[in-house]
Length: 368
Ligand SMILES: Cc1ncc(COP(=O)(O)O)c(C=O)c1O
Picture 1 (tube, rainbow, N blue to C red):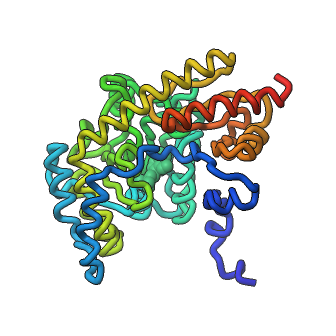
Picture 2: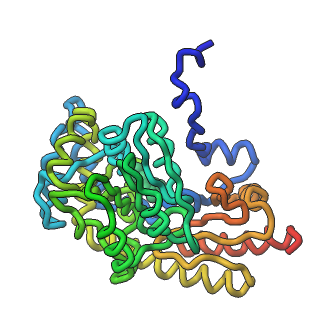
């Protein structure tokens, strides 16, 4: 039995539920032209500048990537006004989260994770045998007082997802500042800003303002997967004190970000037009969706990012299945403990329109 060879903390892991490829779903269900509003991706496609940069690099693929990520790290540092040594790039920001966990956590140490939040945090903590300390959200927002109460001498890491997936809520600068001031020095706080580009200006704080060369130590994680439209390439980065970065470099693979990903991210970083277009699409899409849901009398959570939670009158999986059969892929929130919510990301205007029409049709099937 292979399971006897697997350490118990690995055997106990609930795997992240991967979706099937759209083509496969369509074939199974006998449908065509389905739309996906389930993974908080950018419906505009990739930044065109990134696509051009990738083409330019294709001829060089027989070489290993630049293992130091020199140009990308230098440009990120310039843009953000931090030293280059403060920047670590990763295979998606997911890798940054994992690097932090692998660097700082071991069996017996605790990681505080607000719940519900991004599922990968707990998965990654379990892979190193760390203890997850779950702190329920309050009014769908991270309960910073609850997090403070959960801190013990064994706390090594705290995850703050801002805006939070799946709720779309943010912490105010004041709330975070007060929370931060009460933390012990010997913890690392990961501020996961995967969706920060979509937060309206002034609506929340920025983790970069809290990076310091003494504890509590802050790692701010960001990604090219969302606002920059490069989810399929896998590239993200973390900003932290250079002393922290030096330890993450010990843990990472020497060539963790591919040549194409580095080139594309570098180009996307300066594609301000694309970023602005992405933001506008989300802003306008949300207004449209809110109006449509209001007209249907459906309750939802106002969001600070490109996805939001919608309340449903029956088990969310049923709504998900019914929508799927109509070719609209959304996310049921059962895995997050929110059985009466679905999560939907903003799509192109025509996708938003199709979502609303289909949602109205599906809801009408259920007894409201
Ligand atoms: C909150 C949050 N953090 C991090 C990620 C990881 O993104 P990536 O690895 O594509 O950068 C995601 C992806 O969905 C996310 O929702």
